[in-house]
Length: 87
Image 1 (cartoon, rainbow, N blue to C red):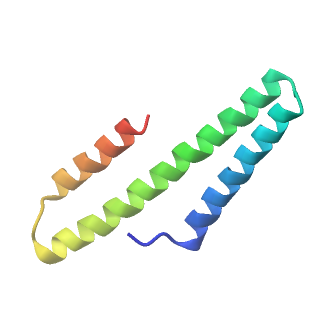
Image 2 (image 1 turned 30 degrees about the horizontal axis):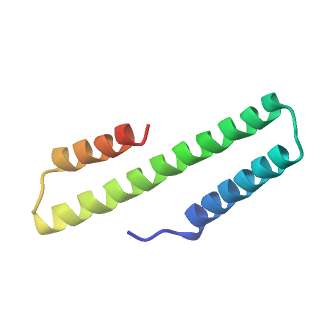
């Protein structure tokens, strides 16, 4: 799968969020603020997983249709399983 620059930038922003959370912990910031930022990072990760799974599904369906190798329903079920497993 090809990971475009937009997706890579998402991950870089998440990396920055995590560094910020660690800095907050080191500075002894209020736990509510730390948890708020951790929740935001988790949401960003969940959304990134969704983007990757959906992009991969599109690519796999196109490839399967071109090759006639796998049913679309199986590919969709595999994508759903990936999303469920990520929770």
